[in-house]
Amino acid sequence: MRCCATFKYHILKRDVVFMGYVRKRLLQCVMPLIVLLSTFFVSGGVYSESLFDTSFRTQTAIMLLISPEDGRIVEANEAAARFYGYSVDQLKTMKVQEINQLSKQAVAEEMVLAKEENRNYFIFKHRLANGEVRTVNVASVPITYHGETVLYSIIADATDLSNASEALLHYQERLESLVAQKTQQLFDQKERQKNEMLSIIVLLVVLVGVLLAVLMINRRSQHTIEVEKERLNEVIWGTRVGTWEWHIPSGKVTFNERWAEIAGYTLEELEPISIETWVSLCNEEDLEKSNELLQKNFSGELGYYECEARMKHKAGHWIWVLDRGKVVEWDKHGNPVRMSGTHQDITEQKKLYSKLDYMAHYDALTGLSNRALFYEKGIQAMLNAKRHRQGIAVLYIDLDGFKQVNDSCGHEAGDKVLVDAAARMKNLLRESDILCRLGGDEFAAIIQDVGTQKDGMKVAENIRAVLSKPYDVECSSANVSASIGVAFYPEDSTDLDELMRQADDAMYMSKQSGKNTVSKGQHVLEES
Image 1 (cartoon, rainbow, N blue to C red):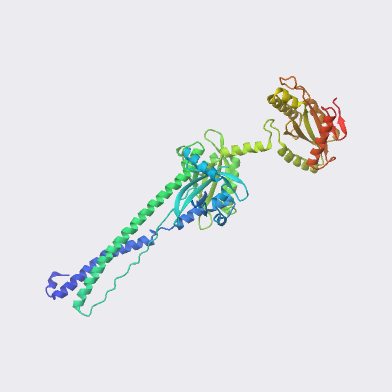
Image 2: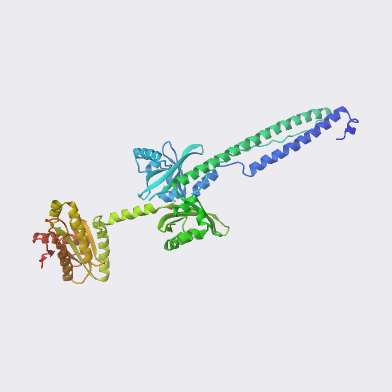
């Protein structure tokens, strides 16, 4: 507005024009704020819990959301469904007490123990849908989920992670436009412009306040996300699993420090890191199995990847890892682009399983097969004999005089006699024959590929002879021999239980015939 022109207009006209200028400048100030606030809403400045739900469901680590009040499972991801053998919907109808096999007292004691050992995870026994009980490490932190406080729990199988919980608050403000009308007279227009100026000022103040409020909420949400991310990292650290992310087209891989630590390295020692780092450390046989499972996952035949494999430790020995992962990004042609997963050291579990398997199938004192493994191998031997039309001799062996050794010379001397007797028979028999300790001083043997019954009786006589030789025990009462009963497949029976019963009966015939003899039915082979 030019100053010279104002003197030619009525004073009222001057005021109206001046107020119109001020109104224009105020609108120029307000519009950038409106654009900034609108851009914030459109560009995703408002957060949603859907991101947490999506991340929670797609994680390969086993995760549950549990109500601390009654143990109700509020939510479970697909990894939990695969691990427990229930569907996600089934899990959400259950309570964690139905899975955890520990009593309330045992759970309380474990929590006290975890605190004393400065552990941030608990060790529980969880039962799967198929009835199998697994030892698991459970790390939990409290979070607010859909307005409810729940325990965010990550479960690692101790007989497999990276996910951040995000919470974004969504706000929407509707800006009302200022509608102006012309007054019929110039005097009225002055009043209207005054009101419009006041409205613009108020709107500006409101918009600034709303913008500041949204910015503060956004900042608070970002802080919450960082806190939840830190908690998740602590849970991952507590479960001591390695994490990896693989960009499949380029072969570039990102490991965390724990991944390298499992194999005895630091990340710096593994540089430059790529998929070839894993290839160079993995056992060749296990690597082939791993590649087959990966291809099945890439083709959609498997929904996720899981493989137990051996890795070469820096110290030179092999360790076992449970390698788990899932493709998290595909290209438009359906090819895998990015895959994430975890490495869990299961070496100790493997050793324990091996030890338990040995204890379940072998006699701890003599190292021979126990009754369970004997029957398992015996049935297989009978099937093989039937297929090749061969004969089998089943021997039931009892040591004569062993009880007197135990009573007079002590259990240590008795154990020595048992070990020596087992070694003598093992050296006498072939690799294909089956020898076991049934318990106490009783043994059993299956002699395969027996030509005639005479051949089988000869083997039994050889065993009787070798068991009747003196034992290196400092005891004058160590006078041990053997009574043996024999039954033949298929002449006597085609059932292993029946053959064992007949051999047992024949063994008692040897006992009644003066011991240190071999019997088959009514036939007793005297000591030569």
